[in-house]
Length: 195
Image (cartoon, rainbow, N blue to C red; front, side, top):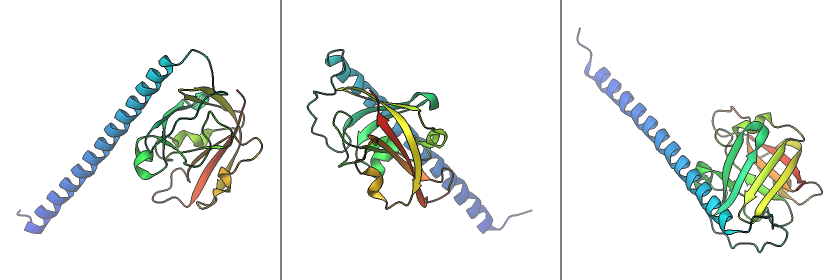
């Protein structure tokens, strides 16, 4: 039985479209892995040039540009580890977590804001609990934070990034975690510095 010509064309178009989407996905995965590996190597090399002690208190802040490596964020209980880069735009969040500009840096004082996508690097935040440890390692040293609470807010609520007692680190991602499309809310994790 002979198929109509348009069915053959449609089948070919669907196969090509699927192959294109799959190729794009693998390209983005490879780019993100390469960026994460490069950032980790840079951090390790920078740490080797520093004396082996935590010198956060007396650190002179670096002048940062978009894409510069801030450090590594780790949540040990969740086995979450991601390199953090300066910036919070789509290009940065495709390859890692992003330090939200105009928020504090780990070596300074104030509220450090870090964002990442809910369907990549911050997927495991859905399981975070109060008192979980969060470690941020930078060339200037290591800071440890303890989770105080989580909250769900509207996307435009920037008050979550304000300085407040016990709010030294704020993680931001979209919510709900398994929502398809542009998520309507934001999942916020607050943590206080303990070391």
